[in-house]
Length: 255
Image (cartoon, rainbow, N blue to C red; front, side, top):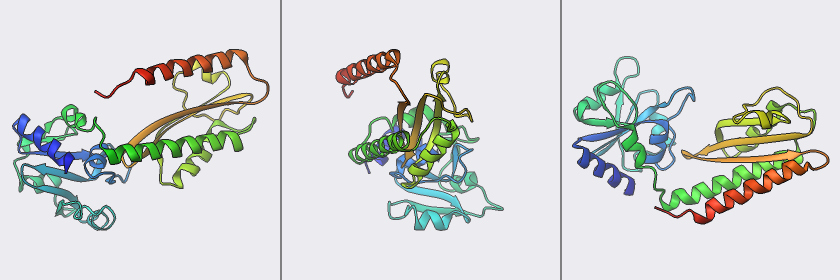
């Protein structure tokens, strides 16, 4: 209800008649963690949420309607279904029967709608209490997963890609996926700011990162492991980094 109120304030201030959440992040946010994703290769989802000045709808086709009702429980959340035939209808046609498309802001650049990605994204900046609780849970799970892999499984001679695969397996036990993996063995960790995983084998050192995602929330966790004798240069770099980050956290305040 608080999120719908935020959206309706945007509708009023922008002189719109509605706002359409078509992107995967937008859908997750407005449905409190729902999923409209089928393929991760597309930013758009297979169902959309339309908020107007007085009503809330979810729009999807005849293929997706059963799962949206039964698993996402969108009607329980107060969204009225609008369904079109997958082979002959279209989302724009379905929406146009409810409200003029050119008076609707959208979080993706879709033909016929007013592109308002920036304004709609800003609605998500202030997390509500349940989101903070889920975010903390996600951070703990991601930290525990990456640390268990580095401490208990990773060994010299293993491929970066093998370690990433094992971490993915652990996280998927809780239906946590990732939007970004990074893994860098030995000198790759020093040469590249964003070291995507390769089939390079580990000798003495591995940096591992995951951008873990669940309920539309993403947390990033990075951990490193060194096999054998500690490197004084690496220890100093680690301590300096921790000091800087702790200082940043200490002076950060809610706006």
